[in-house]
Length: 351
Ligand code: NAP
Ligand code: ZN
Figure 1 (cartoon, helix red, strand yellow):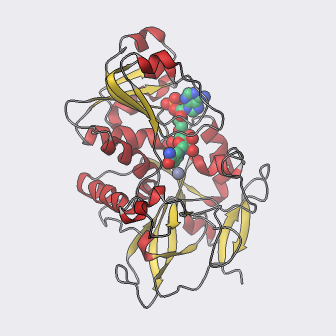
Figure 2 (figure 1 turned 90 degrees about the horizontal axis):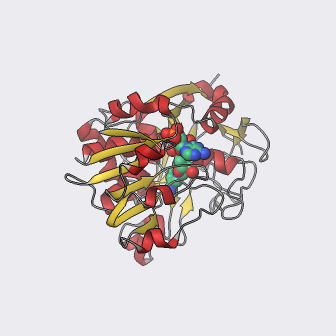
Figure 3 (figure 1 turned 45 degrees about the horizontal axis):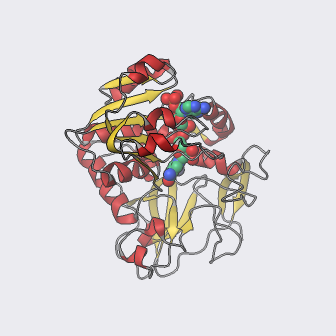
C-alpha cells in the first residue's frame, strides 16, 4: 500500500512530480525515519535523466535522493543504536551482504552485493529502492548514521554523499599538513573537498571554470584559486601537486591536471561524466603519476566523517528549497549555478 509522499521522474524526459510510494513496516533491525532535509546530488540528475544508461540504467518511476537527514519515528525490536526522536542520516547505501571480505573490513562501498538507496533491486518490496525525495524511509540500522546535534540539519544532509565522497579519498591519499592539494570544480562535492582539505591542514588550490566563484573559494578555505581556462595560470603549477581530486560532472580534459602532479602524485576522479575521458599515457609515465577513482565511503568512515564535521563545525553551504522547485534546481545545476548544494526542506512535501 502506498504510504509515503515522494517526488519521482516517470521517464528520462519527465520532470520530477508528486506521487505516493510504498515503504515497508520496520522489521526487527529497521529504523523508520521522517525525512527533514535531502540534498540534491548531481548523481540524482545523471540518474533521473538516464545519463549513466551504460553502467546503471534507470528504472522508472525513479525517486532519487541519497543525502538524507531526519528524525527516527519508529524502531524494530532488535535496534540498538537508535531510539524514537533521535536524529539520523542515510547516504548512498541501504544494505550489503555483510559477509564478503569488503564488508568485513567496513568497506561496504566495494561489496558486490550492496544496495544503493535508489534505483537498486528492493528485496523487501520488489521493484527498486526509492530515495530521499520523500517524507519517510525505512533502513536497516547498520546503514543509518548518527548526526552530531550541533550541526545545521539542512547543511548536514549533503555530508551523507558529497561529504563522504570527498573525505574518503582525501584521507586515503594522505592529505594533511605539508601537502599541496588541488580540488577541481566548485560544486557540491568540490566545495566539501575544499573545506576538508583545508581542515586537514593541506595547502589547497581550487580549479574552477567559473571566475565568479573565486571569492567564495577563498572564503571556503582555498589558499589559491586557478581559473582553469587560463593556460598561463595553469602552467605556473606544473609538476607541483601531491594530490588532485577531480569532482567535475561533465566531460573535460584531465590531462591538463595530470601534468600538474609531481612525482608519484595521484589524481582521483570522483566526478562521474557519462562519456569516457581520454588519458595521454606519457603524462602518467613521466613522473610515475597515477590516476584512480573513488566511490563514496564505508559506513564506519561515514560516521568518522560526520564526527569530524561535528568537531570542526563543517557543513555544506546550502540553498534550501521547497520540493516544488526541484526541477528548476536541476536546470541550475547543469548551468553550474548553485552555492553550493541544494537542500530540499521536506516540510514542503506536507502541503
Ligand atoms: P555539481 O554540484 O554540479 O558540481 C560540478 C562542478 O563541476 C560544477 O560546479 C563546475 O565547477 C564543474 N563543471 C561542470 N561542468 C563542467 C564542464 N563542462 N567543464 C568543466 N567543469 C565543469 O555536481 P556534484 O554533485 O558535486 O557532483 C560532481 C560529480 O561527482 C557528478 O558527476 C556526480 O555524479 C559525481 N559523484 C560521484 C560520487 C562518487 O561516489 N564518486 C558521489 C557523488 C557524486 P566550476 O564552476 O567550479 O568549474
Ligand atoms: Zn551523491
